[in-house]
Image (cartoon, rainbow, N blue to C red; front, top):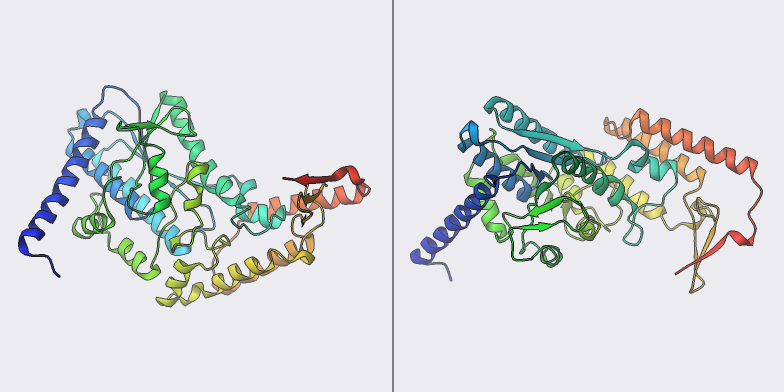
Amino acid sequence: MGLDSAEVIRADDDHAQAFQHIRAELLDEYRQPHPYPWTIDYSGGKDSTLVAHLVFEMLMALPPSERRRQVHIVANDTLVESPLVVQHIIDSITEIENAALAFGLPVVTKITRPAPDQSFWVNLIGRGYPSPNRSFRWCTDRMKILPTSRYIRSQADTAGQVILLLGVRRTESATRAASVGRYDNGERLNKHNDLQGCMVFRPIVELDTDDVWEFLALNEPPWGGSHLKLIGLYREASGGECPVVTSKEDAPSCGTTSSRFGCWTCTVVEKDRSLEGFVESGYAEFSPLLDFRDWLASIRNDKARRQARRRDGRITITDGGVFVPGPFTLQTRSEIFERLRALETETGQALISEEEIGLIHEIWAEELATYTNTRPMSVRGIRKDK
């Protein structure tokens, strides 16, 4: 049955009241008598975009004398993001930065990236870490959590405290509801589980997905342009953003079975449904990326491609007597590197930096020198993991 006119009016009123309440909460919190800056975790997806939109709108409505606290809008680029998504993040961050400068708003934009020696390719090709999976998801901490957490800590150290605005919603998923529950203390601000000096503020936590999409569809961003590109990305990928992650407890949201935007190299999921969606929507140039990603996943458990020993020289056998192989062999790492370079030629995209290539060669040279100058380890090198 369809909604009658009275029900439609009530729904519209509820929608308007929900956003009126959010705007009031944002304004009241911003006017608190302390200098602590705000940091918005901006993934470029619908929820973080909505938070950035509302905060930017609030700052524009305030007289200059009341814009006393800085707002940091922080995105993360793992360096292996889905190409369309990372370009959207860069474009939107640039638009926000330019508009903030033009309007004289206390807004700072930042895109965090992993340290060069902790990038995906340096760990996979250089150190031989096997392609990530659910039991060994080494990528999330190094590429997402640490870069953004480092920036937030630097702001907290400077100001004494920072308030982190998260675009999380209780109705997004069961996993997200559990994550939200960890911060529920009945107060507007909650201590971050991992970051000292960081308080968490979740202004849109009670909105549902329809509320978010309706707002973005009907309201142009205050920094200019429109939200149509973002809406188009979701439509083409049939997915959602892989959120900015600042806690290991939130890490399962990265690399789930849902169709999230994220790293094109992600082997935690069985299928990259968002990238597949882009290909099916006409971006055929990304098809080779899918094939490469599938190949990385397929070779992960091939014991012939893995060394017997871990990088520390030890052999791992579980309590159940199962042998766990070490990193990829140097031969396999070399093959991955050559295939990646060929992929760059095929797609016309720069997929690995010269700095990363230099670090990889340094790691290989050091490893080869170690193998040459050491004897085989004794049985004392064997470890049993629990």
